[in-house]
Length: 367
Image (cartoon, rainbow, N blue to C red; front, top):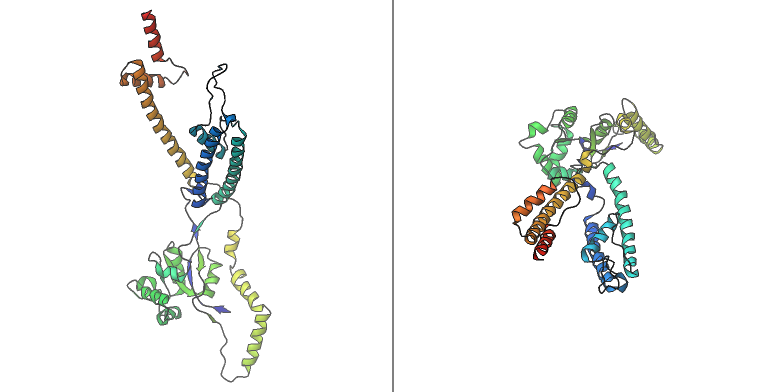
């Protein structure tokens, strides 16, 4: 039975959900490349639509033998068409020429694969809990200062660190033997176990790995961090020169080779006297429902988008009322007041064009 010194610490806890968890399915490189391809395809469709004669069509005002042709794929419409395909919503801009249709088909294929991959990964990222592991080894424990650590005062574990020539172990001993010695060096192992459980992840305790493995099977808040800092094994002491030594050696080897020692360890560590209690609690499986914290980022992005749309609407309102005031011959403030009065009526989808009415009245008076 081999053992050594290891770290007793609390079990990893679930990390709080990230506000931007919906961005986790892809890496930053994938998002950057997707954005670049999005811009590139927009430009390609815009250029192809202008290049192909089949994409130019008669205007919608039903003029017979028109002298001008129109092209729906200006740059903004090309952008809207590519965005609608990526979001799987489509648009009212339809390609007519073969080249634009072929380019659009390739973009549809790209969007299909990317959206399917994103959806599959998003389901996994949102339903699988990420565990916080503040420390993974004694090197990480020694390099930080938020988690205190100690051992049994004047025990063999403390002596191991005190007499070690390893730089990391010397740093560990310097902390345990420093100004916080009375708080981190405890009188017994069980006192250390209780301190680890009650410190909410702010304390780690060095002790023998065999004892840690025994405790972890029964006290479900605890876990072993990292591997063994040293290696040693249990043995049976006999008088020097006794004839029983060879018999004991052979018997122990047979128990080891036959798996008897392993079965005994499983029996007394994992089965008897409360062993395996934490395995029973961990069973059950199932998927936890998503809480607001898991999808808060989606709400945040939606609200920010609506706020930006409101800013655009306000700017359009200012520009539109200024132009309308100039055409109608009224002041800008008066035009804004009239428009706001109509807007807050909250009904009606048609309105009069004041500029045209004033022009028609002036024409009648001139006649």
